[in-house]
Image (cartoon, rainbow, N blue to C red; front, top):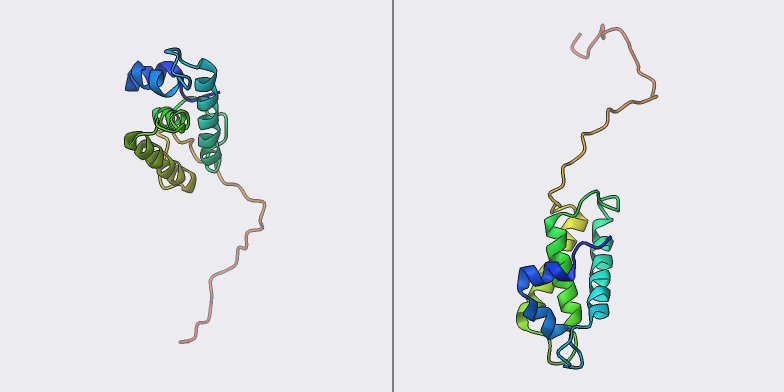
Length: 137
């Protein structure tokens, strides 16, 4: 399961971004395989952080993970000389910081939290009569 698609990136940032960073040979054609690889790699990075706090696979894709995955995938595609921009670099840096916060439990995913399970214990319980004597007596 990936958290984002090429269509998500096009919808969010415009198709010209992928046209620019996913055309390594400047042929005017996107390298769809490179895009898919970048999204898979970005998903793996996201999973590395998220799995510290959440059981994978997630039941639904939180919007924050879609955004973080898109930013990391675009950064990976733009890693060729002359493709990286300050904006792409800043987005990837913010994505890593957010993922660190998620992994450390300082930020959430916006998922509903499950109700805490009832605690039961097989430990013995000590029942004793009240104290009769105290220090002051």
